[in-house]
Image (cartoon, rainbow, N blue to C red; front, side, top):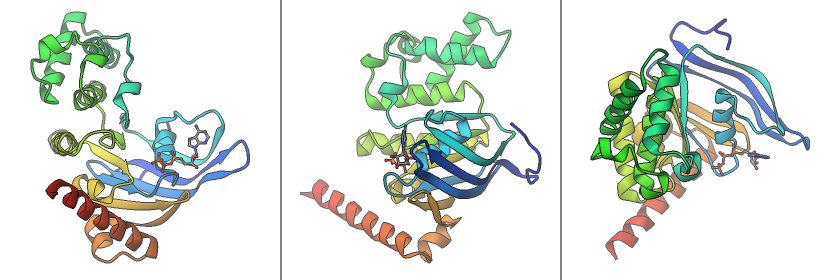
Length: 258
Ligand SMILES: Nc1ncnc2c1ncn2[C@@H]1O[C@H](COP(=O)(O)OP(=O)(O)OP(=O)(O)O)[C@@H](O)[C@H]1O
């Protein structure tokens, strides 16, 4: 990827990103943003607003039917974690092998034994107990939360400067979701990684990000520091999103109290 014209602190720059489907539908239109080293950016918006495709554009893993226009400049190592670790993990590979292989690919010259030890360390770091024994587990033997921890360990094995997270906690129950969000907060602080975190849930994004972008129908609605946008949303759509989020949280709370 080209690094021309990146501003000094930016690790990622997206300029006029437009995504067109082969049936002529525009999925994302003229989207521009920059990410500084160590920054945490949340992208929120309802289903279909183009959040996932924006992350996939950065990773260059767009579906074949989607054409990309605009410039993406990135001098950072990027890794991505997905909503559904059950489908992202290879069912025929032991989870320790996945992480050890990923480690070896990104650490040339490292022996199989060293990679295994690194995988065990990463398992411990992401909160997988009994790490050495768990290296031999198959994905189906683990809970959803544990599988997501494995995906995070695999992402960390690439030593990323930027972690791209596509709704990584949506499939998890509220308690496990909170644990994974705490883990991501800790890892970002500890490693100085930048993070882009996509979710339809404003409260989730607010708990891990300091910058926010609101998207709707493939377009940017508004963007800025999280506190500013939450305190004084400019767009009616953002106000509606905030109200819907609050209503959902209150309903969840009632459900818990009942
Ligand atoms: N593989 C694909 N083939 C064709 N169209 C797609 C594909 N993936 C996404 N789209 C379309 O692109 C648009 C944006 O999708 P995207 O997944 O980026 O939205 P999103 O904001 O992440 O929503 P969600 O939270 O539901 O994933 C949608 O209209 C969707 O139907």
